Each structure stands twice: as C-alpha cells, then as structure tokens.
Image (cartoon, rainbow, N blue to C red; front, side, top):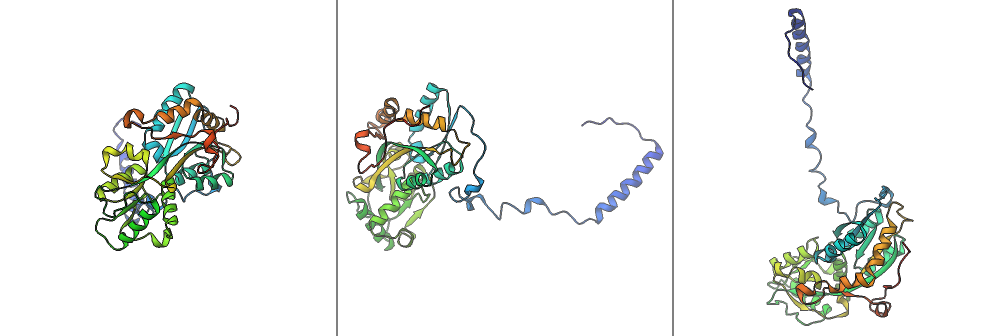
Length: 341
C-alpha cells in the first residue's frame, strides 16, 4: 500500500514523538527474539527419512486422482533404458490420457502404491509383488516381459569370476573382498529395489547371511538407481549386478564388461499391477486397467519387444507370451484382459 506525504501540525507531531519514545523504550527492554531459522533442518535432515520407511497406512492419500490422468510408479531399470519414455508418448497420443511417471526402486514404488499415491505399478521383484498382492493392495497383475541380470566388472576382472555361476562368482568376490584383495570391490544399489532384492537372493543361494556376512569395506552400498550404480561402480573399478537393459543403455557412461551372464538366479521378470481401490478409493482404477490391457495387447508387447533393436542391435526386453509365462521359471499370468473399461 502506498501512502501520500503531508506536514503534521506541531501539537500532533509533538504527541507523536512522545508515543514513539514510549514504544522504543519498551522495545529496548524486551529480550531479543530467538531467530526461528536456528531450530529445524540441522536436527532432521531429509536423508534420515527414506521413502521406504515413512508413511503408515493410517496416513494414506485420500485425494482423488484427476480424471484423464494415470499415475505410474516404476523401477529405475524400466525408466533408465528409455522404454517408458517411448511408451508414455505413444499411449498419450493414442488415448489422450496424461501419463505421469515416478521412477524409484521397486520397494519405494510399492510404498507409494500402498499409500494410494499412484494408480499402477511396473516392477520386477516377484517376492515383493507377492506380498503386495497377498496384503490386498494390488489387482489384475500381469507380467509382460523379461530380460536377465548380469554381473559386470572391470575389464581386468581382479577376482577372476568370468563365466562362473552367479553364486560361485559372489562367493569368490566375498572371500577376496574380506581378504582385502587389491581391486576387489562390489557396488550394491542398496535401495530395496528389485535388483537389490535379486542380489540378496544370490548371496543367500551362495550360502551367506546377507545381513551378517555381506559386510566390510569391500562392499559399497550406495542407495542409488541402476544407472547411477553402474557409473559409480565404473569409477571405483567395482563389480555390480545390473539388468542387461540398463547396462546397455549406460554403456557410453561406464567401462564395465559383462562377466557372468548365465544362471537361473539372473532371470528378471517385469509385471504391471493396478492399485486396489478397496484399499485406496482415490486411485484411478479404470485408467490403470486400461493401460494394463494396452500393455499386454499385440501393440503394447510389440513396442516392448522392438525397443532397443535399432540402437543396440538387440531388444532390451523379451515380451512374455501366454504359452510360457504360466510355468516355471516365470510362474505368472500374462494373458487375458483385466476388468473391462
């Protein structure tokens, strides 16, 4: 607000001076206020509350999601390859539905879904997916593709694990790492993602207790996505477990080489799961189901199966067909449209 200037009468000015004197005297006798900025951020930095642990079910999101929007939480391995950018553009152009994607580890994505922050999951951790479904948070699960994890490491392969089984390779890395063998390091995502869960599974199959045995200066748990972990491992000259798709997508940013590429423990299956509106009535189940139907259609699987061939000379993902997905090692449903839209 602007004020105009005018001359005060003498008496009025004198009275004003007296009032100002009283006010100023009162101000000088007050103790200085404690600055509000000295209390917060230093005592509770954001890093102390990771997304995977905060937010109990009682504080679930109750704000209805907007019509005409689809909110997806996905693993970084699907997003970092660039597949979801292509899918997002195609789907939006065809349907007019606005697709919004958040990329995190599978564990963090599942937490978002449990709170009702997203409508749909695209993830790759069968054990975590089963718990999510068994607890009633998910509906209409359809697996749609797979590829393989690979163990990558420095070209000189200081632990000499090339062409071993995944379990034998991990056992040798652990033994040499604990023995402080020069150059033997392992970089883990350490983020409760599908890849981290798969890594923990290999340690278990190799005979180790992950919490008690897989520790020491040689084991670098960084809490990052797959692309960042590959770059970090390359910089440190460390081994790591990666899905093949993200490894190829990041090949120009790191100099690791595939050393172990075969073994049942390396199978990497991807699923789509709608968030159950019975748990979170605010979610957009109609659009989640509609997307799942598109993804498992001939068109959707064609997009998935072709992705990467032009740039890498091979597809980064293999679509799952009904004749193979129901049996081992996949053990999932990949055919049949979900609830009609």
